[in-house]
Amino acid sequence: MTTAEAAVSELTGTQRLLAMAAGRGAQVALRGGGADVPCAYPELASTLQRAAAGLAWRGVRPRDVVGIYVADAASYVLACHSVRAAGGVPSPVCASLSVPQIAGQLADCGARMLITSQSLAPAALAAADRSWVRQVISFGEAPGATPFSALLALGTMPPAVVRVHDLALLPYQQRPDGTLGPAGVTHHDLAADLSRLGAETGLTPLDVVLVAPPSGDGRAYTALVDHVLAQGATVVAAPPGDLAAVARQFQVTAAIVPGGTDLATASPVRLLPVS
Image (cartoon, rainbow, N blue to C red; front, side, top):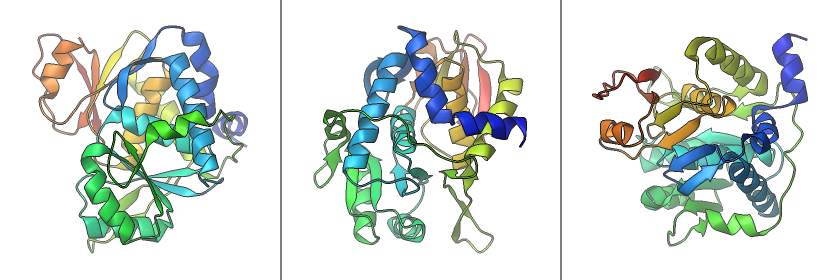
């Protein structure tokens, strides 16, 4: 067993996040987006454990796949880590996909639940009707969907036990013929990604990191956002639009953005591009 495998066999990324959160005190983990008010690390841990209990009560079991089709980074963090804490496997859905493509991905991966955002709920519900999805959970009120907040009233649960080579993420990539295909990422794979980023980015708990809405490769985006939280830094979830204005407002020191993005800010900002 390699060093990375040994580490993952003890704690997954979600388990490590929950374990370290209590020691972060009032340090803000999430700001903006699905985090309606600034969310400190201990509050984030509590929310994830309560959401995991709500997901389990609604039928999510270990290794079940749950679609993640959300509009901002804070919602992405809450959705993915809640699913992982319940033992499930998040399957990120690219925002640029059509309803038939979304439905195709959800049907192919066997998802019975989809977590979305209020602005994306119409497309999410239309895709759910064409797939095996039976429950749609939404950040914000959306007719036909259950509010994410409804998951938080059913107690808490400890993070589920998983194995090194269990799936941690199930992104889909476009094949040469234009169709979508699964590109599963194990906990071991994700741990290796986080280890590499730890050596490359130099992020610390003092960093404030602007994060654009989910884009590009689901694996790259997930690893970058998880790395920010693993370092105890703050995620600022930016809405679509003027990223530079949000960067100036919160005096960010780094940014996770699509490749080729240019942030015109007075102070230098380290760019962490998503492939």
